[in-house]
Length: 247
Picture 1 (cartoon, rainbow, N blue to C red):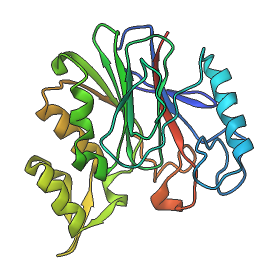
Picture 2: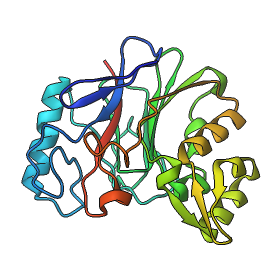
Picture 3: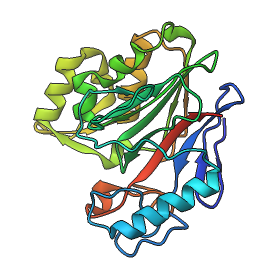
Picture 4: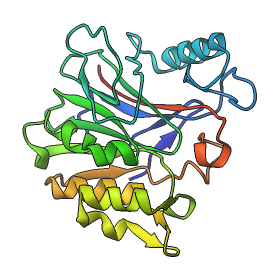
């Protein structure tokens, strides 16, 4: 499947019901200055807050959003919150909803953005999956919110490719402690370092959970500096947003 890119947004190409809208922002078309240029959507990275708010408003207008996305304070946890009731605390790494016009949103710059939708199009979710969140069980936590994993559609957004993501023994061993089935997602470099394929880890865990409807954009955040931010490439950089909502 081929995801389509316009001037601000990469639309997810997956067979979700027509009223489900989903995808990821790109870094072009915003007002943020270097090193956050251009469409940085994160307020926690050191960018000028007024520029971030302007970027968020421009993206909302571009996507014709009826409400403000529910921005989270992400901490690489396994916590997922419901948007169906008022949340005083938005410290979480994912959200879900069964209500129209609630917008699940997460920010990334190498970690894996994962969007979920049941086959009926009555429930959606979005999670931020870095290695810490994966090891804490955030993918499994998200799937608990869906009655039938086998009929749940999942879209994996842009993230860092294995050849650009080197990790040490501590990360390798913690990931295998979570699940030995993900060992194939690592390629050993030497006794203390491995290349880590986050995208493949996500797919293995999803398949182990009996999710069969998995779709992915396949783009690398590190390689595609023209489209995405990458923490590994630039360190001090912006964030793109992956969002899903029901119209």
